[in-house]
Length: 315
Image 1 (cartoon, rainbow, N blue to C red):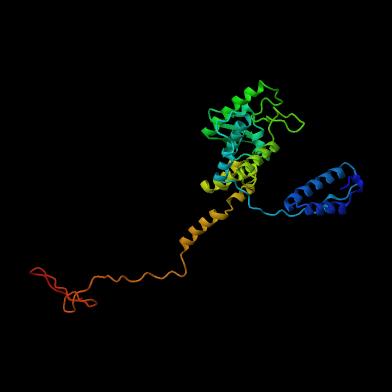
Image 2: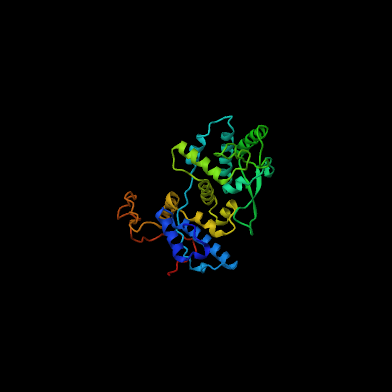
């Protein structure tokens, strides 16, 4: 926006900026976040007494619904295969433990990065994490992981302790740390962040020759599998740490093969309007002749033997 003075900005400048974002290929959902941020900024400026225009005039594009991108089990296995088994290299050990913890818990990447070593209970294979997006109803929640993941976490912590003897850690209490330099900045020993996790996913995806996956696609996978197993919106909310059930609703919306499977069950129970009534059996046993006492379709008299003094009455 050519770095103008704050008081010189007006609505046409904001609209021009949105148009440039669209020209660069930004999606409506991304522009929606920027519009909300600009509204908040100008609201703050107005409260501080700056002469700016009314922030409510900034249009906020309606968000579009997109089907979440889900990392299925086969795709996740392809990522893991790019990490050599029994490799002594620190980043291989860390990346395997990090991915397995993401897969088992379905936690947000920021929540995993915020974990400290002391938060981990290896005996019960559980930890308490601060829910990243909830500051009210669900400030913390419990996560669990499998025995296999616990084994790789222990291997990583042993390697981390060894690295701490080689160079200084900025965040020694962090469970996952950066172990490589980033350009001219030495971030070794600093807490791993979402940008570092995204770079790991990018490199592994390229090595596996699959479309680049992000860490949130693994979280979507946990939400989808929870719905498959429990068919409960509240269960998804508890596992993923949603403070609002509306956030969990998207996972109960089936699509693809899941939707087709449920549709097939419904149609099978409803029946087809073109179904024909069952035909009569052709192998019915042949009836006896007309002269026989069991002639088909006729009543025959029944002889009843009575006692010596019995009387017969007519009905």
